[in-house]
Length: 133
Image 1 (spheres, rainbow, N blue to C red):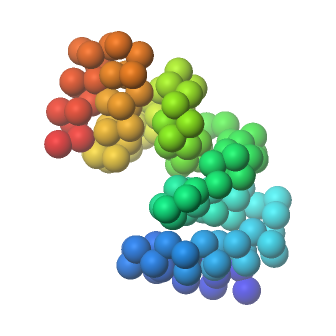
Image 2: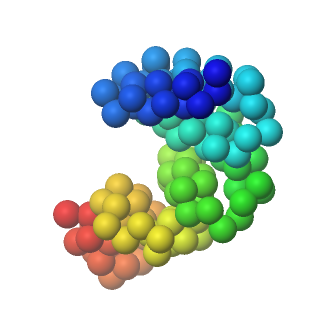
């Protein structure tokens, strides 16, 4: 059932078994294609494989964000995808929302540092780099 696939996907993610996690999240998404959690989890996990399908990940993340624009987890996922796509302004828009809700998350600060540095905003990049460390 769907909650079981979600739980197993989460366990696989924690163990860094990303291909297996994708299989579980894919099953959940197939069962509940309109569920934003299923779309978001699959989109996020796709970032951890060696050759991520960023177009698909972005499509899934956009689906989740459209379902709940204020959800910081969905915005984080999409922001991380935008960083990989080097869409810096869009990444910052989403990641700033995420980091305000999750201020201790080093990975979000690291992604913001990358995006700000790419835009030449070195002071903001340094601020987030410091928070990431």
